[in-house]
Length: 194
Image 1: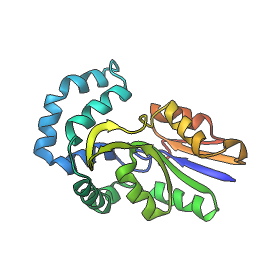
Image 2: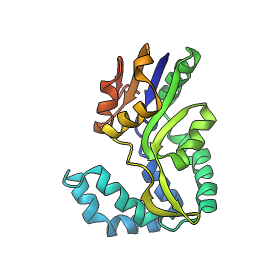
Image 3: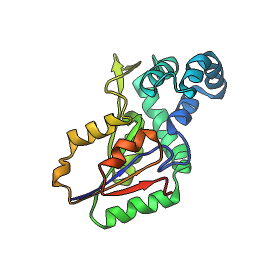
């Protein structure tokens, strides 16, 4: 078996789909007001004093808590059909198609939420490993149902789903510190190649 592992944000896309999703769901005015309110958290994150796994749940809780499942699913579909498709790098999509034509198993491994990214992946015939939102009474709680799929967590989740010892060749594509561990397990490493 040969497998290709792709990070999503800024590897397949030109920007961060998580941020774009928040803007799309909340509207620009509420989003930018939220950025001002959350500026201490964001400032500490940018300085490296607040790790990703602590900052992201705070931001997610602020923007998404209480959204109903039906509203989220409808808006997520619109987001994927419109905004997300425009963010995809043509070169990354071509590489995905090449792997598929070679008969390779192709998996997107992302810190972004499976709850919306699954729609895009399904439309392209891709498997997905990502972070999952927690739902209660058909509303987003603002918490995560899984650990944030970032850094070492990416490899842990890959190993849960795939027997890497059975892989003849592993290709991995990423663009950031959060992809380092995933790139380390690959025979063929693609760092910022698109």
